[in-house]
Length: 107
Figure 1: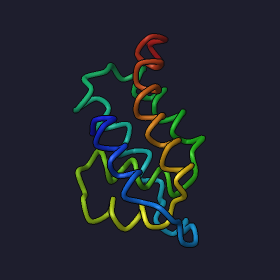
Figure 2: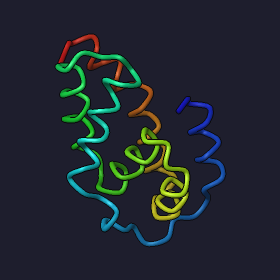
Figure 3: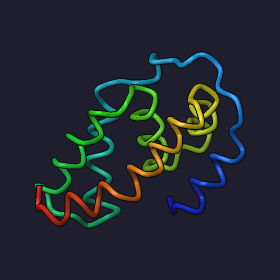
Figure 4: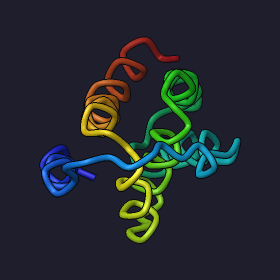
């Protein structure tokens, strides 16, 4: 997902409902790490770093990122309704910055 696409999603989301952590599962971090290698072509160490960094996000943000990288449009839409604009912005910044940071450090 490009930053512009995520920004469009942020604009579409204006008011958050109640954050729902029920969306999150340990599988979300695994999905983020797996798709890092597949989509970003980063080495395992960098993808492990990305997973570790994603672990600092909220459960809802992790679930959202997993839905984004797995191209689950319905999941993205559902989860977006539970996150605040600030949480969505943070998730977008994560997708913009964390892969490059992890690639630089090599994990």
